[in-house]
Amino acid sequence: MPATIGGEEPRLAPRSLVVRRRPRPSPAKAPAVQTARASQFAKARARRPTTPEEVPEFVREAAAEPKTSRGGSWLLPLGLGMFCALLLALVGSAAMNGSSTLMDNVRYGYPRTTQVDHIVGHEVDPHVPTHFTALNLKGQVLIFEVPGGDGAQARLLQGPHLVGTGADLAPITLTFSGDVHHPDLVVTVNGLEVMFHNTGTSYAPMR
Image 1 (cartoon, rainbow, N blue to C red):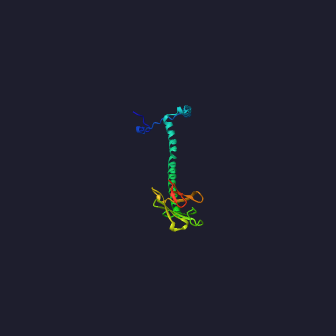
Image 2: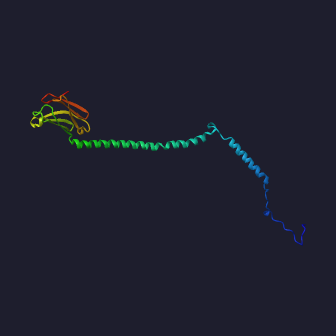
Image 3: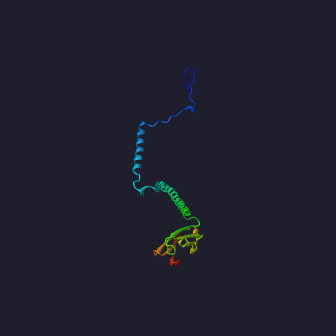
């Protein structure tokens, strides 16, 4: 029977209220843990690969991906630049063709007409030149000669017939070559050159 103090029985703490405390690690162990970790870190740095062959393959692939993305980044501006250059070239070509046609319209009219005065030896009065009118009539080149300005003596010379798109827009150039007193007539149109021989009284086509 348990002893009593002052006539009262001693009370025992319930088991559920008993707290067990785990022993704390000794302060002397903490530096040892830090020293061990530092040693492991130093070993890991010592094992770090120093050559490309020692680097793992997945690391090399990951390092190569940014280079590929940077390399592909300039392809888009380059393609846009080439497209813009081509577009500007086409627009410039169209503008030049349009301006050339406009200048020909102002200079030669439509249909394209060229007029020249020249002494060719067919004149009654040697001081009055012969008048030539070259006409591009829907691709057919016609040259009208009026010797000395005398309409009654007018003659028609038939030049080449042009074909193709824009043939009716080709201007005609008239020049003279050969004998000073009886020069030959040279008709230039659309890259073609046709010569008419001076017989002394008229012009005859030369083949």
